[in-house]
Image (spheres, one colour):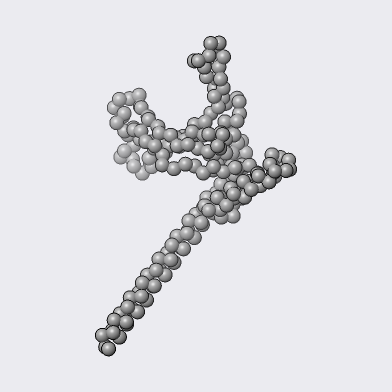
Length: 205
């Protein structure tokens, strides 16, 4: 969610755009290409000290689509310069999309113009809040915008609270699964006893 907000912000800033020469153009004009690639890089844990000499990483690549405000998973092929380590790298495709959430604050000037546009943004904010509640109950979606930009370093407690609420949500779901499993086992035992009682009554007759 924070990565979505950061990528969306960076893609809208012209100073981070790259000039790409148009090969089909007769003139020497070039087009601005906004940054739209988001990478997740993960190194192996330090506990694997016996494999520390092997440079292995996990990669995830997503292409940001400004039109649909969503991430599109992309396959990534990594080729290392050193031929001795080339066998430790490969290509893969991520199997899940990042959820598109509007991370703008509720009191943003963009949603205070009035009319149908305001109503539409309010409905979208409500929808985003429901999606966020599925993984972090009670965390306001508007607070996500504070986790990006230069002020993000001063808002670490907000990120910790978000993760804490996510853990609470997972624990609650685990508890519900455990209770439902216990109820299923109890019902199965009850049905087994009833079946045994019916069979015993039928045999006595």
